[in-house]
Image (cartoon, rainbow, N blue to C red; front, side):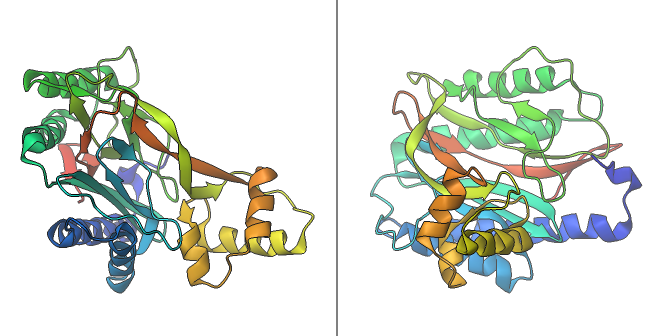
Length: 302
């Protein structure tokens, strides 16, 4: 990882611009999402807003409802809608020349879960107040966990915040939302996405992999036998590098060749991100900001 204190003003401005766009899109989506709205409309509106503002999506917009904690984005022709009285996590990522800002908000249409949603925001604010150069990752996780449990809720133990690198959403260190044993520390110049996931006290407090997967990324740069597969892989490398993408995007470019796509998956040129579901079926809330660590503490990009 390159230390931000060593980066040029130009690179810092790219992080800041990605953060400005991500913040604007997050707030826009928060204001327009409604019960009964098609999920694919939310995904595509968020991604198009990012492009209109001069950025590129760092990953497909995630719209994860109720017990789905993360990684749901619409496949092509998705007919699913936002249910009535639901809890909806909207997670967007923006990059400028590979420099990424990642942010999320939970929209609550069910009064029974408003305090849980507020708790995820309180936990995020606690983490931002706590994080600083030199703090141990274990101490930060303990503070986040305490903030959640004091309000009568439970953190998701196996979903974490994460260090961010150029063209890498998950780079290096993780930031658990629970107390852990770790000797790793946060350093000046690093960029992190901080994202507490909160569920009910009755929940298991962990996620399992669901059967669906609609987000993909390049895993290995091999040379497939099929001509169509090679063509598709070259396109993916050129346009997304190591960043995740959706099948919807390939259809947008007129490149959705199912046989070539299946070939790339089966040959492990591509990997799929499964949808994450709370293990006991309890509902989940999420709040997220991206920060970079100055010598004086965190600077919130989003």
